[in-house]
Image (tube, rainbow, N blue to C red; front, side):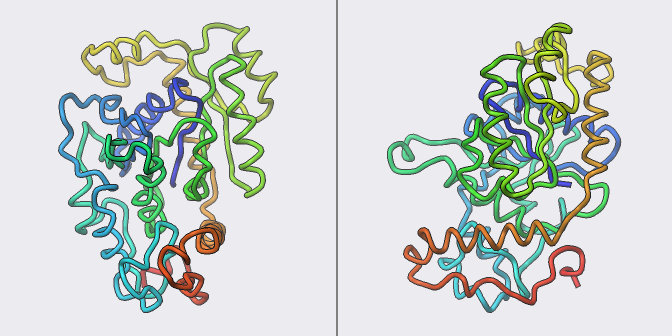
Length: 317
């Protein structure tokens, strides 16, 4: 299952992405965490210290495109492949944490969790690029991934409703929106809810930094049935964020451990809808082709859509 964590900046979505990834990994499940946030703090939240020897996806986009293009006859060249290009017959598809050059180059272990990073927003990008240009590798990776039962991808997304600036928001089976019990905390929820409904994207709200019953009632009043669970204010998390030794999750507050269990139950109960994932991929590819990509490449990129491609496990054969 592909899981996204979104929310207002400072809501704790990176912390929850790390906690949930560790919770999954504790059970022995294959887990890949992807840092898709402009601040790139997921490795630190997972307990890594010092520089991370993981080549960012954004620095190797041409190689990623060339590898995933494979022998797909509808993609004339690497230069003609854009971040929304969907897979077709002949494309090189990926198994989660498979034995391939993309995973070998970009994945590093942080504790029990495998991690990929998109890369930081650098000085050379100022004034000439938006951060979403860094996320093309993530979008292509998820578009060509055939994940199986009991496998998880957890993505820490960009803050706020800015996550809708690309079609990446449609690449997930479920999206957790992290909200603090404040008016600002739930304002992003309303924006995300309205956009998500347009495309049938399933979202669930996860309250965070809750200090009492009044906070819970506020969240229930503001988001209604979309509130799945909540985490209470955590001295365990605060100690970790202050540089304390990363303790095992068995010492996390009992209520917060239970909340992580509720999140996994929601993920595992979500249906895997390959047809919808692929339909969204094609729709956003055609949108991008009309808006800018045809012009940028000098080609009609609608021809890259393979009408006979069958998404999901059947595509591996």
